[in-house]
Image 1: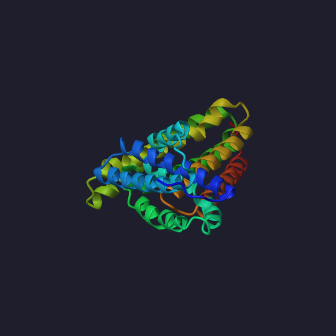
Image 2 (image 1 turned 135 degrees about the vertical axis):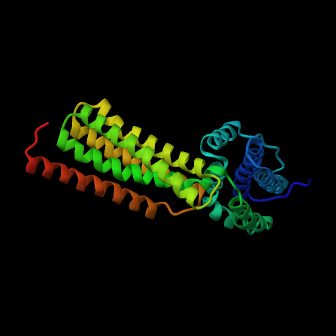
Image 3 (image 1 turned 30 degrees about the vertical axis):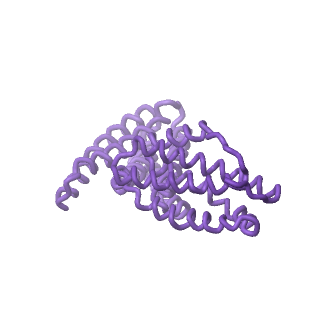
Length: 292
């Protein structure tokens, strides 16, 4: 292939893009090896082919054969294993969002950059949206378990903090409430799914129950590790915000949903309930005159 001449500034940008396209084509193929479903593997291979084609266009300008950055490939394979391939590939494509200015710089010297940018913005995004991963079908169940656990247990632990005072007793009370609520919520989700005639009722209730139980464990942990109940309460609120941040970020990437509006909604409800419950604990102890 004949090497084409461009300015040094354009060449630096093209080399960066060629490396990205090469990395991504390999990442798509590697993830396709363990992605479930023939449809998903086909989509991933199509994406890999497109990235490889773009890489060849850039190579016509650089005249260089680049090596795959193995660390980057390993990073996204690991993310795909842990959080699912949809999250991993959409997170990877998000990294290209800042390339708009670079494409504009190339338009005068590299006519093909217009087509490549169009492919990135339209065709590849359309392919990403038709990926069909099982765990994302149950995000609603996970949100149900997560939200209910955050609201109910945050409120309970905040109320127990002032009413009981002792972190161990608070942890024990929270554990009893949390485990009971886990079974209740999972059973409710199972019955709801069955009443709708769904065949995946057990999976749905499992996702709800696991999300609830993991949240319970994380919220109770500060009361098991710390000796000061108020410090444990502050740490518990911090854990709540971290959980909300992590889960909201995951869904914003994997499902292409807005981050901030959903974060502030969940955080506002959970923290608001905690404040009200703490106030109820203070009032109940004062009115009943109970010392524990």
